[in-house]
View 1 (cartoon, one colour):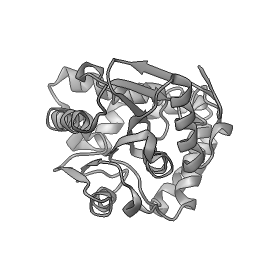
View 2: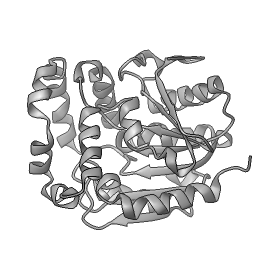
View 3: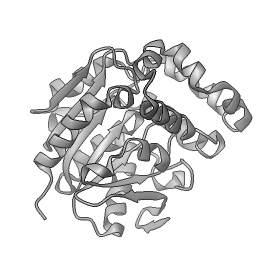
View 4: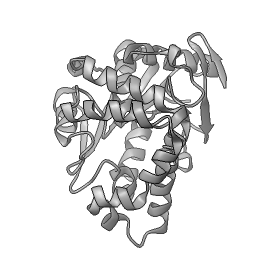
Amino acid sequence: MIDTAHGPVEVLVCGEGPPVVVLHGALGGYDRGRVYSYPEAGFKFICPSRPGYLRTPLSNGITAEEQADMTAALLDSLGIEKAAVMACSAGGPPSIQFSLRHPDRCWALVMGNAINAPLSGLHALIKPVAKAFFGWDWFTYIGVNRFVLYLLQPNLGLQTMGDPVKQAHVVAMLDSIFPTSVRQAGFLNDMTQFQGQSGYPLEEITVPTLVVHGTADIVVPYSQGVASAKRIPDAEFISIQGGTHLCFISHNESILPKLVEFLHQYAPAN
């Protein structure tokens, strides 16, 4: 737990090198950020639990703008002047806002299957289910597992089959959902914010940007990744053919070298 000007923040820091903040997706936390961290690549990964998740109070930041400011305050408390920000899924809005509100603190932006616009009405149906059941941990322990995940995304099962490392990462991702009761407040807030916002001025982003998105993503539509790549000036785009919302796991061997190259290209000199 780190005290910041925007309240206490739960954070995991791993690795050494240029700092990269990982802003996790819905129903995540610092442990979800760890799944998408690669300290062995020579970077210091900073993985906070966003407001409403685990031990970071929701009052730290309701809106994406407030969460971006909390991220800047966290860097202040850690004594870090500038960092790259890697947005994972629902971490997209606060990451976009960080690059817009604190461009002098952001040396690069990575949009990994990340949200940049309101989600469809289908996602609104998830909110009442989450409100009714996510406080009961047994419900998600029973209903969320690899078998259900592969049933919904059979190509993900095929893409990770026979690879123990990828399978372990899928398990770690699923583990970062539990217990849902201490992630419920953040999830419900995310769902409210996604329906309430009208999109972001992506054309105003000035920091180097890498967009990664799977063509078979059923959580955040591929069209959002295409929009990020088109609208953010000079953005680089990695389109993963057949990739699901977890293409960072299933196609790690294709994505990681390009991600590391991108980060090294724009990392500030010591």
